[in-house]
Amino acid sequence: MSITNLSAQQLRQAANLKDQIATLEKQLIALTGTKAAAPKATQPAKKKGGMSAAGKARIAAAQKLRWAKIKTAKAAPKAVKPVKKARKKMSAEAKAKIAAAAKARWAKVRAEKAAKK
Image (cartoon, rainbow, N blue to C red; front, top):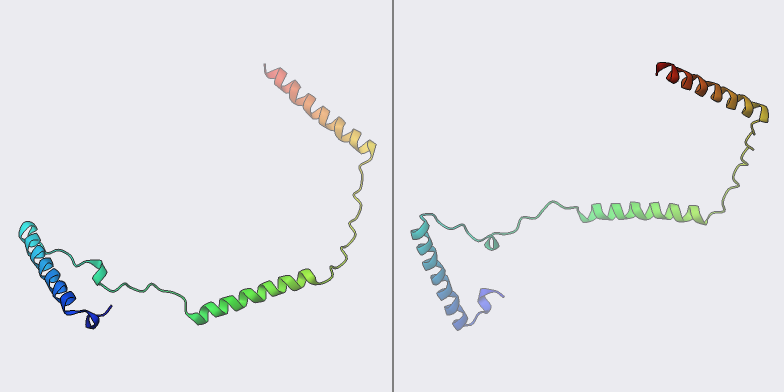
């Protein structure tokens, strides 16, 4: 609501309020010895840095393009996966050799530990 749309009574009331505020500020200065800071509501709010409409549009277009690529990749027929090679199985002989070597190593560790005691 602008000041030009106020009635005479509202204008008088606003002037009275302004006078009361001025009186209260004088009393505050008399008590504290310092002037009160202006209320923040009267100061215009600073606009924080933002993004332009063109920047937002570029980002939106790029995102739509990424999603379109993903959707077309899903819709396309899938390529045949290469056949995996069968894993080579270890022979029983090889397993027995490894087990024997491990047993020998642990026997040696236990023997050294017993010798230290």
